[in-house]
Length: 440
Image (tube, rainbow, N blue to C red; front, side):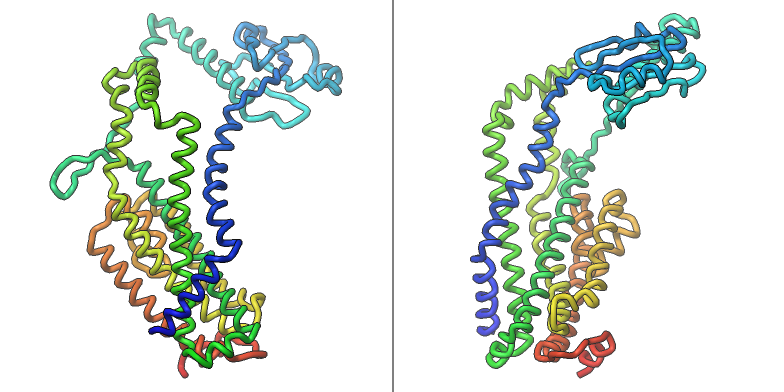
Protein backbone atom coordinates (compact mmCIF):
# COMPACT_ATOMS: atom_id res chain seq x y z
CA UNK A 1 0.00 0.00 0.00
CA UNK A 2 2.91 2.35 0.70
CA UNK A 3 4.11 1.95 -2.89
CA UNK A 4 0.67 2.92 -4.22
CA UNK A 5 0.69 6.01 -1.99
CA UNK A 6 4.10 7.02 -3.37
CA UNK A 7 2.81 6.67 -6.92
CA UNK A 8 -0.29 8.69 -6.02
CA UNK A 9 1.89 11.42 -4.53
CA UNK A 10 4.12 11.45 -7.59
CA UNK A 11 1.20 11.67 -10.03
CA UNK A 12 -0.53 14.34 -7.98
CA UNK A 13 2.44 16.62 -7.34
CA UNK A 14 3.86 16.45 -10.87
CA UNK A 15 0.51 17.33 -12.44
CA UNK A 16 -0.56 19.98 -9.93
CA UNK A 17 2.76 21.82 -10.26
CA UNK A 18 2.54 22.00 -14.05
CA UNK A 19 2.07 25.44 -15.57
CA UNK A 20 -0.81 24.20 -17.68
CA UNK A 21 -2.70 23.04 -14.57
CA UNK A 22 -2.16 26.34 -12.77
CA UNK A 23 -3.12 28.40 -15.81
CA UNK A 24 -6.28 26.40 -16.53
CA UNK A 25 -7.30 26.38 -12.87
CA UNK A 26 -7.22 30.16 -12.62
CA UNK A 27 -8.18 30.96 -16.20
CA UNK A 28 -11.24 28.71 -16.55
CA UNK A 29 -13.41 30.63 -14.03
CA UNK A 30 -12.53 33.84 -15.86
CA UNK A 31 -13.52 32.23 -19.15
CA UNK A 32 -16.82 31.02 -17.68
CA UNK A 33 -17.52 34.48 -16.26
CA UNK A 34 -16.60 36.05 -19.60
CA UNK A 35 -18.88 33.67 -21.51
CA UNK A 36 -21.77 34.85 -19.33
CA UNK A 37 -21.07 38.56 -18.84
CA UNK A 38 -19.64 39.54 -22.23
CA UNK A 39 -22.68 38.44 -24.29
CA UNK A 40 -24.97 40.19 -21.78
CA UNK A 41 -22.87 43.33 -22.00
CA UNK A 42 -22.79 43.26 -25.78
CA UNK A 43 -26.54 42.67 -25.90
CA UNK A 44 -27.08 45.73 -23.72
CA UNK A 45 -25.27 47.97 -26.19
CA UNK A 46 -27.64 49.84 -28.45
CA UNK A 47 -27.25 49.93 -32.20
CA UNK A 48 -27.53 53.60 -33.09
CA UNK A 49 -27.56 52.90 -36.82
CA UNK A 50 -30.93 53.87 -38.28
CA UNK A 51 -32.36 51.34 -40.71
CA UNK A 52 -33.93 52.80 -43.85
CA UNK A 53 -36.78 50.73 -45.24
CA UNK A 54 -38.66 51.54 -48.43
CA UNK A 55 -42.31 50.48 -48.54
CA UNK A 56 -44.39 49.83 -51.65
CA UNK A 57 -48.00 49.57 -50.49
CA UNK A 58 -50.33 48.61 -53.33
CA UNK A 59 -53.35 48.81 -50.99
CA UNK A 60 -52.61 52.27 -49.47
CA UNK A 61 -53.75 50.96 -46.07
CA UNK A 62 -50.59 50.67 -43.99
CA UNK A 63 -48.91 54.08 -44.13
CA UNK A 64 -50.38 55.03 -40.76
CA UNK A 65 -49.32 51.69 -39.30
CA UNK A 66 -45.65 51.63 -40.28
CA UNK A 67 -44.37 54.74 -38.54
CA UNK A 68 -40.72 55.78 -38.33
CA UNK A 69 -38.95 55.81 -34.98
CA UNK A 70 -35.40 56.11 -33.65
CA UNK A 71 -34.41 52.74 -35.09
CA UNK A 72 -36.48 52.27 -38.25
CA UNK A 73 -37.31 54.82 -40.93
CA UNK A 74 -40.12 53.82 -43.30
CA UNK A 75 -40.22 55.62 -46.65
CA UNK A 76 -43.33 54.95 -48.75
CA UNK A 77 -42.73 55.10 -52.49
CA UNK A 78 -44.82 54.42 -55.57
CA UNK A 79 -42.31 52.71 -57.82
CA UNK A 80 -41.74 49.24 -59.25
CA UNK A 81 -39.56 46.88 -57.22
CA UNK A 82 -36.80 46.85 -59.85
CA UNK A 83 -36.69 50.65 -59.89
CA UNK A 84 -36.15 50.80 -56.12
CA UNK A 85 -33.47 48.15 -56.37
CA UNK A 86 -31.61 49.92 -59.18
CA UNK A 87 -31.83 53.33 -57.52
CA UNK A 88 -30.34 51.97 -54.29
CA UNK A 89 -27.79 49.52 -55.65
CA UNK A 90 -24.92 51.55 -54.17
CA UNK A 91 -26.85 53.17 -51.32
CA UNK A 92 -25.32 52.09 -48.03
CA UNK A 93 -28.25 53.52 -46.06
CA UNK A 94 -30.71 51.25 -47.84
CA UNK A 95 -31.69 48.32 -45.60
CA UNK A 96 -34.69 46.64 -47.15
CA UNK A 97 -37.81 47.00 -49.31
CA UNK A 98 -41.22 45.96 -47.99
CA UNK A 99 -43.76 45.11 -50.68
CA UNK A 100 -47.44 44.76 -49.75
CA UNK A 101 -49.52 43.58 -52.72
CA UNK A 102 -52.89 42.80 -51.14
CA UNK A 103 -55.08 43.26 -48.09
CA UNK A 104 -53.36 41.28 -45.33
CA UNK A 105 -56.72 40.48 -43.75
CA UNK A 106 -57.58 38.40 -46.80
CA UNK A 107 -54.10 37.25 -47.77
CA UNK A 108 -51.59 36.83 -44.95
CA UNK A 109 -48.78 36.10 -47.45
CA UNK A 110 -49.13 39.37 -49.35
CA UNK A 111 -46.12 40.99 -47.62
CA UNK A 112 -42.55 40.40 -48.84
CA UNK A 113 -39.22 41.87 -47.77
CA UNK A 114 -36.48 42.39 -50.36
CA UNK A 115 -32.89 43.23 -49.45
CA UNK A 116 -29.38 43.10 -50.84
CA UNK A 117 -28.21 41.19 -47.79
CA UNK A 118 -29.98 38.69 -45.57
CA UNK A 119 -32.51 40.51 -43.38
CA UNK A 120 -31.92 39.95 -39.66
CA UNK A 121 -34.55 38.39 -37.45
CA UNK A 122 -35.06 41.56 -35.41
CA UNK A 123 -36.23 43.58 -38.42
CA UNK A 124 -38.47 40.81 -39.74
CA UNK A 125 -40.04 40.26 -36.32
CA UNK A 126 -40.60 43.99 -35.78
CA UNK A 127 -42.47 44.45 -39.06
CA UNK A 128 -44.42 41.20 -38.65
CA UNK A 129 -45.57 42.13 -35.15
CA UNK A 130 -46.76 45.59 -36.22
CA UNK A 131 -48.72 44.28 -39.19
CA UNK A 132 -50.10 41.30 -37.25
CA UNK A 133 -51.39 43.49 -34.42
CA UNK A 134 -53.00 45.88 -36.89
CA UNK A 135 -54.70 43.06 -38.82
CA UNK A 136 -55.98 41.53 -35.59
CA UNK A 137 -57.51 44.85 -34.55
CA UNK A 138 -59.14 45.25 -37.95
CA UNK A 139 -60.62 41.75 -37.83
CA UNK A 140 -61.99 42.34 -34.32
CA UNK A 141 -63.50 45.65 -35.39
CA UNK A 142 -65.20 43.96 -38.37
CA UNK A 143 -67.41 41.93 -35.98
CA UNK A 144 -69.11 45.15 -34.78
CA UNK A 145 -69.36 43.83 -31.23
CA UNK A 146 -69.05 46.51 -28.52
CA UNK A 147 -65.99 46.14 -26.27
CA UNK A 148 -64.88 43.01 -28.15
CA UNK A 149 -61.25 44.02 -27.97
CA UNK A 150 -61.44 44.52 -24.23
CA UNK A 151 -63.21 41.17 -23.80
CA UNK A 152 -60.46 39.41 -25.76
CA UNK A 153 -57.79 41.08 -23.65
CA UNK A 154 -59.58 40.11 -20.47
CA UNK A 155 -59.88 36.51 -21.63
CA UNK A 156 -56.12 36.10 -21.96
CA UNK A 157 -54.47 34.30 -19.05
CA UNK A 158 -50.87 33.75 -18.06
CA UNK A 159 -50.99 30.99 -15.46
CA UNK A 160 -47.85 30.38 -13.40
CA UNK A 161 -48.23 27.16 -11.44
CA UNK A 162 -46.31 27.11 -8.18
CA UNK A 163 -44.81 23.80 -7.11
CA UNK A 164 -44.79 22.78 -3.46
CA UNK A 165 -43.20 19.60 -2.17
CA UNK A 166 -43.49 17.93 1.20
CA UNK A 167 -40.33 16.99 3.05
CA UNK A 168 -39.96 14.00 5.35
CA UNK A 169 -41.45 15.95 8.26
CA UNK A 170 -44.51 16.89 6.21
CA UNK A 171 -43.49 20.54 5.95
CA UNK A 172 -44.05 22.42 2.72
CA UNK A 173 -41.11 23.65 0.66
CA UNK A 174 -41.22 25.74 -2.50
CA UNK A 175 -39.83 23.81 -5.45
CA UNK A 176 -38.85 24.70 -8.99
CA UNK A 177 -38.76 22.28 -11.91
CA UNK A 178 -36.71 24.76 -13.94
CA UNK A 179 -34.09 25.14 -11.22
CA UNK A 180 -33.91 21.36 -10.78
CA UNK A 181 -33.32 21.02 -14.51
CA UNK A 182 -30.48 23.57 -14.43
CA UNK A 183 -28.77 22.00 -11.40
CA UNK A 184 -29.06 18.49 -12.84
CA UNK A 185 -27.78 19.36 -16.31
CA UNK A 186 -24.83 21.37 -14.99
CA UNK A 187 -23.82 18.49 -12.69
CA UNK A 188 -24.16 15.98 -15.53
CA UNK A 189 -22.08 18.05 -17.95
CA UNK A 190 -19.34 18.63 -15.37
CA UNK A 191 -19.04 14.89 -14.67
CA UNK A 192 -19.07 14.17 -18.41
CA UNK A 193 -16.31 16.71 -18.96
CA UNK A 194 -14.14 15.44 -16.12
CA UNK A 195 -14.47 11.78 -17.10
CA UNK A 196 -13.47 12.53 -20.68
CA UNK A 197 -10.60 14.89 -19.80
CA UNK A 198 -9.01 12.97 -16.95
CA UNK A 199 -9.70 9.54 -18.43
CA UNK A 200 -7.79 10.67 -21.50
CA UNK A 201 -4.99 11.93 -19.25
CA UNK A 202 -4.65 8.48 -17.68
CA UNK A 203 -4.39 6.87 -21.10
CA UNK A 204 -1.92 9.48 -22.38
CA UNK A 205 0.22 9.14 -19.25
CA UNK A 206 0.44 5.37 -19.61
CA UNK A 207 1.34 5.63 -23.30
CA UNK A 208 3.97 8.28 -22.59
CA UNK A 209 5.66 6.22 -19.89
CA UNK A 210 5.56 3.14 -22.09
CA UNK A 211 7.04 4.83 -25.18
CA UNK A 212 9.78 6.54 -23.14
CA UNK A 213 10.68 3.19 -21.49
CA UNK A 214 10.43 4.78 -18.04
CA UNK A 215 7.90 2.15 -17.11
CA UNK A 216 10.57 -0.56 -17.35
CA UNK A 217 12.41 1.06 -14.44
CA UNK A 218 9.25 1.61 -12.44
CA UNK A 219 8.01 -1.96 -12.91
CA UNK A 220 11.24 -3.24 -11.37
CA UNK A 221 10.14 -1.70 -8.05
CA UNK A 222 6.36 -1.99 -8.04
CA UNK A 223 3.76 -4.34 -9.43
CA UNK A 224 1.91 -3.34 -12.60
CA UNK A 225 -1.42 -3.29 -10.76
CA UNK A 226 -0.03 -0.96 -8.09
CA UNK A 227 1.33 1.35 -10.78
CA UNK A 228 -2.03 1.45 -12.55
CA UNK A 229 -4.03 2.12 -9.37
CA UNK A 230 -1.60 4.77 -8.18
CA UNK A 231 -1.85 6.59 -11.49
CA UNK A 232 -5.66 6.40 -11.57
CA UNK A 233 -6.15 7.60 -7.99
CA UNK A 234 -3.50 10.32 -8.30
CA UNK A 235 -5.13 11.83 -11.37
CA UNK A 236 -8.55 11.56 -9.68
CA UNK A 237 -7.25 13.71 -6.82
CA UNK A 238 -5.95 16.20 -9.38
CA UNK A 239 -9.43 16.42 -10.88
CA UNK A 240 -11.08 16.94 -7.50
CA UNK A 241 -8.53 19.60 -6.59
CA UNK A 242 -9.16 21.47 -9.81
CA UNK A 243 -12.94 21.23 -9.41
CA UNK A 244 -12.84 22.55 -5.84
CA UNK A 245 -10.57 25.39 -6.94
CA UNK A 246 -13.02 26.24 -9.72
CA UNK A 247 -15.90 26.34 -7.24
CA UNK A 248 -14.02 28.60 -4.83
CA UNK A 249 -12.66 30.91 -7.53
CA UNK A 250 -16.00 31.13 -9.33
CA UNK A 251 -17.75 32.03 -6.06
CA UNK A 252 -15.18 34.72 -5.29
CA UNK A 253 -15.34 36.05 -8.84
CA UNK A 254 -19.15 36.11 -8.80
CA UNK A 255 -19.14 38.07 -5.54
CA UNK A 256 -16.57 40.50 -6.94
CA UNK A 257 -18.52 41.06 -10.16
CA UNK A 258 -21.72 41.43 -8.17
CA UNK A 259 -20.06 44.07 -6.00
CA UNK A 260 -18.79 45.99 -9.03
CA UNK A 261 -22.06 45.87 -10.91
CA UNK A 262 -24.09 46.48 -7.79
CA UNK A 263 -26.10 43.25 -8.00
CA UNK A 264 -27.11 41.58 -4.82
CA UNK A 265 -25.95 44.47 -2.56
CA UNK A 266 -28.82 46.91 -2.42
CA UNK A 267 -31.68 44.53 -1.90
CA UNK A 268 -34.10 47.38 -1.15
CA UNK A 269 -33.47 48.94 -4.54
CA UNK A 270 -33.83 45.59 -6.25
CA UNK A 271 -37.04 44.94 -4.37
CA UNK A 272 -38.44 48.38 -5.29
CA UNK A 273 -37.58 47.84 -8.93
CA UNK A 274 -39.21 44.44 -8.85
CA UNK A 275 -42.28 45.95 -7.19
CA UNK A 276 -42.61 48.55 -9.96
CA UNK A 277 -42.39 45.87 -12.62
CA UNK A 278 -45.00 43.75 -10.87
CA UNK A 279 -47.38 46.67 -10.45
CA UNK A 280 -47.04 47.62 -14.10
CA UNK A 281 -48.33 44.18 -14.98
CA UNK A 282 -51.16 44.40 -12.51
CA UNK A 283 -49.62 42.10 -9.96
CA UNK A 284 -50.43 42.55 -6.26
CA UNK A 285 -48.02 44.55 -4.15
CA UNK A 286 -47.54 41.63 -1.77
CA UNK A 287 -46.35 39.49 -4.69
CA UNK A 288 -43.85 42.14 -5.74
CA UNK A 289 -42.48 42.51 -2.23
CA UNK A 290 -42.12 38.77 -1.74
CA UNK A 291 -40.45 37.94 -5.06
CA UNK A 292 -36.92 37.94 -3.63
CA UNK A 293 -37.99 35.79 -0.70
CA UNK A 294 -39.63 33.43 -3.20
CA UNK A 295 -36.32 32.96 -5.01
CA UNK A 296 -34.54 32.17 -1.77
CA UNK A 297 -37.34 29.77 -0.86
CA UNK A 298 -36.86 27.87 -4.13
CA UNK A 299 -33.12 27.62 -3.51
CA UNK A 300 -33.66 26.42 0.04
CA UNK A 301 -35.94 23.68 -1.27
CA UNK A 302 -32.91 21.85 -2.71
CA UNK A 303 -30.54 19.84 -0.56
CA UNK A 304 -27.30 21.11 -2.08
CA UNK A 305 -25.20 19.23 0.49
CA UNK A 306 -26.75 15.93 -0.58
CA UNK A 307 -26.34 16.75 -4.26
CA UNK A 308 -22.70 17.77 -3.70
CA UNK A 309 -21.90 14.55 -1.81
CA UNK A 310 -23.43 12.35 -4.49
CA UNK A 311 -21.72 14.44 -7.14
CA UNK A 312 -18.32 13.55 -5.67
CA UNK A 313 -19.32 9.89 -5.26
CA UNK A 314 -20.60 9.49 -8.79
CA UNK A 315 -17.69 11.46 -10.19
CA UNK A 316 -15.22 9.15 -8.49
CA UNK A 317 -17.19 6.04 -9.43
CA UNK A 318 -17.56 7.03 -13.08
CA UNK A 319 -13.99 8.21 -13.33
CA UNK A 320 -12.52 5.08 -11.73
CA UNK A 321 -14.66 2.89 -13.99
CA UNK A 322 -13.57 4.57 -17.21
CA UNK A 323 -10.02 5.43 -16.10
CA UNK A 324 -9.17 1.77 -15.50
CA UNK A 325 -10.33 0.96 -19.04
CA UNK A 326 -8.43 3.91 -20.49
CA UNK A 327 -5.32 2.74 -18.63
CA UNK A 328 -5.73 -0.74 -20.12
CA UNK A 329 -5.99 0.77 -23.61
CA UNK A 330 -2.88 2.87 -23.01
CA UNK A 331 -0.89 -0.18 -21.92
CA UNK A 332 -1.92 -2.20 -24.98
CA UNK A 333 -0.65 0.22 -27.65
CA UNK A 334 2.73 1.71 -28.55
CA UNK A 335 1.64 5.26 -29.50
CA UNK A 336 -1.26 7.65 -28.96
CA UNK A 337 -2.34 7.31 -32.60
CA UNK A 338 -3.06 3.61 -32.01
CA UNK A 339 -5.42 4.36 -29.12
CA UNK A 340 -8.29 5.43 -31.39
CA UNK A 341 -9.11 1.85 -32.30
CA UNK A 342 -9.76 0.89 -28.67
CA UNK A 343 -10.85 4.23 -27.15
CA UNK A 344 -13.84 4.72 -29.47
CA UNK A 345 -15.90 1.93 -27.84
CA UNK A 346 -15.16 3.57 -24.48
CA UNK A 347 -16.27 7.06 -25.49
CA UNK A 348 -19.51 5.97 -27.14
CA UNK A 349 -21.24 5.09 -23.82
CA UNK A 350 -20.18 8.48 -22.41
CA UNK A 351 -21.63 10.32 -25.40
CA UNK A 352 -24.81 8.24 -25.15
CA UNK A 353 -25.01 9.05 -21.45
CA UNK A 354 -25.07 12.81 -22.06
CA UNK A 355 -27.84 12.42 -24.64
CA UNK A 356 -29.76 10.17 -22.25
CA UNK A 357 -29.32 12.81 -19.54
CA UNK A 358 -30.82 15.50 -21.78
CA UNK A 359 -33.91 13.42 -22.49
CA UNK A 360 -34.11 12.16 -18.91
CA UNK A 361 -34.29 15.74 -17.65
CA UNK A 362 -37.75 16.01 -19.23
CA UNK A 363 -38.96 12.82 -17.52
CA UNK A 364 -36.62 11.93 -14.63
CA UNK A 365 -38.80 9.00 -13.52
CA UNK A 366 -39.29 7.49 -16.98
CA UNK A 367 -37.91 4.14 -18.17
CA UNK A 368 -34.95 5.73 -19.98
CA UNK A 369 -33.88 7.69 -16.91
CA UNK A 370 -34.40 4.72 -14.59
CA UNK A 371 -32.43 2.16 -16.56
CA UNK A 372 -29.65 4.54 -17.58
CA UNK A 373 -29.21 5.52 -13.93
CA UNK A 374 -28.63 1.84 -13.13
CA UNK A 375 -26.29 0.93 -16.00
CA UNK A 376 -22.79 1.68 -14.65
CA UNK A 377 -21.48 3.21 -17.89
CA UNK A 378 -24.23 5.86 -17.90
CA UNK A 379 -25.35 6.10 -14.26
CA UNK A 380 -22.78 8.74 -13.10
CA UNK A 381 -24.15 11.23 -15.62
CA UNK A 382 -27.86 10.35 -15.76
CA UNK A 383 -28.29 9.99 -11.98
CA UNK A 384 -27.06 13.56 -11.46
CA UNK A 385 -29.96 14.77 -13.59
CA UNK A 386 -32.46 12.81 -11.49
CA UNK A 387 -31.14 13.73 -8.03
CA UNK A 388 -32.52 17.32 -7.90
CA UNK A 389 -36.01 15.93 -8.56
CA UNK A 390 -35.72 13.38 -5.77
CA UNK A 391 -34.75 9.74 -6.19
CA UNK A 392 -35.81 6.89 -3.87
CA UNK A 393 -33.03 5.70 -1.60
CA UNK A 394 -33.27 2.12 -2.86
CA UNK A 395 -32.62 3.23 -6.43
CA UNK A 396 -29.56 5.21 -5.35
CA UNK A 397 -28.29 2.23 -3.33
CA UNK A 398 -28.72 -0.17 -6.27
CA UNK A 399 -27.11 2.29 -8.67
CA UNK A 400 -24.09 2.81 -6.45
CA UNK A 401 -23.81 -0.92 -5.71
CA UNK A 402 -23.77 -1.79 -9.41
CA UNK A 403 -21.29 1.02 -10.07
CA UNK A 404 -18.90 -0.20 -7.35
CA UNK A 405 -19.10 -3.82 -8.49
CA UNK A 406 -18.55 -2.75 -12.09
CA UNK A 407 -15.55 -0.69 -11.08
CA UNK A 408 -14.04 -3.66 -9.25
CA UNK A 409 -14.67 -5.90 -12.25
CA UNK A 410 -13.27 -3.48 -14.83
CA UNK A 411 -10.26 -2.81 -12.62
CA UNK A 412 -9.55 -6.53 -12.41
CA UNK A 413 -9.88 -6.88 -16.19
CA UNK A 414 -7.82 -3.77 -16.84
CA UNK A 415 -5.16 -5.00 -14.42
CA UNK A 416 -4.70 -8.22 -16.38
CA UNK A 417 -4.41 -6.32 -19.68
CA UNK A 418 -2.12 -3.75 -18.09
CA UNK A 419 0.16 -6.42 -16.61
CA UNK A 420 0.71 -8.04 -20.00
CA UNK A 421 0.64 -5.03 -22.30
CA UNK A 422 2.77 -2.55 -20.36
CA UNK A 423 6.02 -4.31 -21.32
CA UNK A 424 4.99 -5.43 -24.81
CA UNK A 425 6.44 -3.47 -27.73
CA UNK A 426 6.35 -3.64 -31.49
CA UNK A 427 3.19 -5.70 -31.85
CA UNK A 428 -0.14 -4.51 -33.19
CA UNK A 429 -2.72 -5.58 -30.64
CA UNK A 430 -6.18 -6.76 -31.71
CA UNK A 431 -9.37 -7.39 -29.78
CA UNK A 432 -8.70 -11.10 -30.05
CA UNK A 433 -5.29 -10.55 -28.46
CA UNK A 434 -6.81 -8.57 -25.59
CA UNK A 435 -9.22 -11.44 -24.93
CA UNK A 436 -6.25 -13.83 -24.63
CA UNK A 437 -4.60 -11.51 -22.12
CA UNK A 438 -7.74 -11.56 -19.97
CA UNK A 439 -7.54 -15.37 -19.71
CA UNK A 440 -3.88 -15.46 -18.64
